Amino acid sequence: MTSQELQGMASWTEWVPLISADPPFSPGVYLARQGAGGSVVYVGVGAGARTGGGLRGRLRRYTSGKALASGLGEGIFDRALADRDWLRERLAEVESGRPMRAVQWGKASLVWADLHVCWALTEDREEALALEKRVLAVQGIEWWNRAHRAGHYLIASACPRVPARLRAGRQKGDRAGDLGGAGMRWSGSAVRW
Image 1 (tube, rainbow, N blue to C red):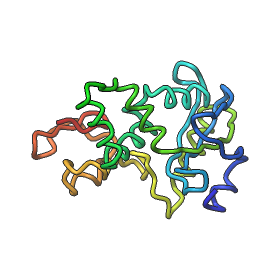
Image 2 (image 1 turned 180 degrees about the horizontal axis):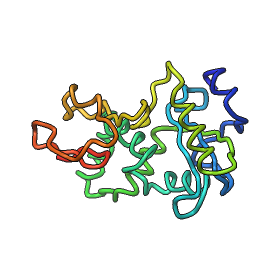
Image 3 (image 1 turned 180 degrees about the vertical axis):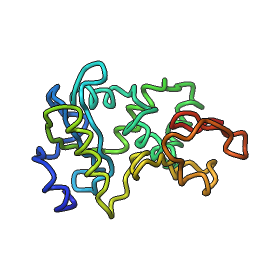
Image 4 (image 1 turned 135 degrees about the vertical axis):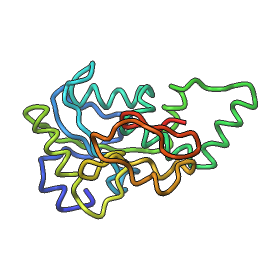
């Protein structure tokens, strides 16, 4: 852990590479860091609401490459796309007639991220959500989480097409509408062009 504050919040497991993580189907909260000794960058919940259940179902969704547009998968993919070398490798594959499918790009971005995870089990979904909220409140961590400040949805700063004034996000409960330029609209928690 990078923070004593995080350590004291729950009984966390040891860190393991995300690719080989084998958590239980139980509800809980997971932390992710980039590299074996890197800083914590993401917190998420695996609480059985999705097919596959619990922490195992959630983390396996990421390692399958099928979660490019949700949670941690989106955070990983956004940052991989911002890495010129990683993107050049993908473009070289396309130009040589060997384009990968989206799932393969997702897996390639996961390898690029070199994420390690640990987790804490909870009794139920409500307890997991409460722990996640407490973890996100820790100051001084540059979270990859899109929504991490009291009721705000944040737009990934890695996306240069989004004007700075819009990266601050919006309040929960705001209605869908025009973002005022570049043909962008938001709906739910997503920005669409």
